[in-house]
Image 1 (cartoon, helix red, strand yellow):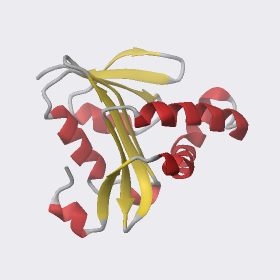
Image 2 (cartoon, one colour; image 1 turned 180 degrees about the vertical axis):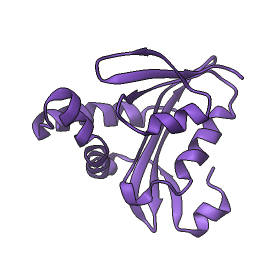
Image 3 (cartoon, one colour; image 1 turned 90 degrees about the vertical axis):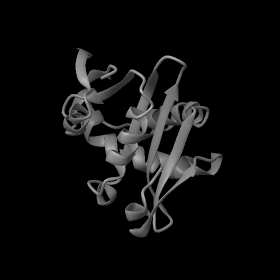
Length: 154
């Protein structure tokens, strides 16, 4: 899925394995601690460890659960569920030093090319929603903390 230009810069994808939980948790914390502080009153490691362990095991069962590597270091994760008629559970997390280099765009190009409606949720203050909008995602609902976005067939 990654084009040669990204592979030549040291990016790679690999399937998520059981041993990746520590990296998964570190990436989730780096990406979401600010938002959890903003919307839920603070990041509690005990609560987050338990919740993210459940999410990690669920993510590993998804059709796509891949880790993003940069020069062999885990710098992010992609997950989504694909059904016959749609894709949901789309999640992209990347450490800051690996962002804005085209990997997220490549991932979104990959899933939108499947030609199915796609849904995801994004924290309301997360600038990633602008990237999703560029790919045709629109806000169809919201919670106190998230925008629910979907992309219908174009």
